[in-house]
Image 1 (cartoon, rainbow, N blue to C red):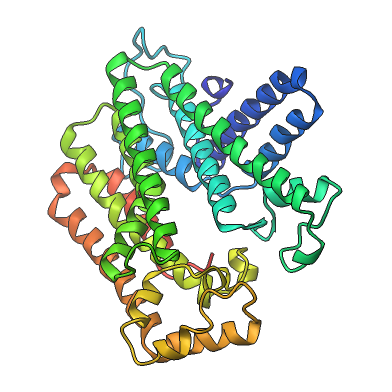
Image 2: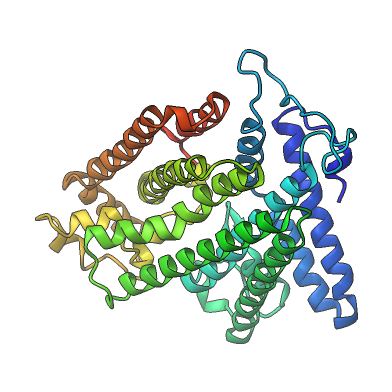
Length: 390
């Protein structure tokens, strides 16, 4: 770990520290994998390349919130003012518990990637961020087929099984690594236990959300709007926003009231983020968001868009095409037009706006529980969500 020797002045410094930590984790794991053969080393190497290409939304949110919780002077930009040196936080630290904050932030990115890997296996996806994901890269390197999702006929069954197995196993390994990092963090025991409880809660809700997602898509669970929104909250909001915000509060040793308020704020922002994701997947520009265009329609994803459309007169025209693995571009564009005509796009955008309004009301009603600098971090995040294209 090198984070403790780096002074973090701004977001670019924070990003570099997190990327350095992630790089060191994957380098160490790849070295430890050497006795098990080249294919296992390559698995870690490819995974490391994929993780380091991410936006680091979650770890950056944790670090910036933690910094803000140390009461930075709102009139003066720059790093947080430091408390007097103590045995726990000596003078050569750039801020209190910096090493542990960066370590936990990196672990949260590992958790995120482990969820993505399992999600890609479940959904049968071979691309992410506009390029082959780990499964697609493993398939291409297997020499038995192609990673092009359109060229399914040339995929080897054995090669695809090998690649998907690699995705599952790497997801499992990263879950284990996340627990190791949380458990070994240099923090007081009470803090460690709170962090581990938060991690368990986060994984549970994320798994429940994934189970609901698959059950909804397979027609096993009734796809009503309330269940779809619950699924979206569990699957995305909990670990994307609530986890880093609450982890920052725990690491900063704040009151339960602050942690609870940040938890609620994260739920609102997280649901708004997922609903925006649903809109982008159907109506957005794939060159910007990097996802397989119309993959949600092809896979039969039960999003809020579809839940609303089911209640309209256009649904009989949408239903025969929805969920077809061979959905053509023309049919996908037709579904998109029908979703607009029936008001689904406008309805879901209204849900996004509603979550953002609830978020701002929460900040206003609980102003005394949230330091001014933390409110600035949260408001900046909300503004980034408004009208995002990727």
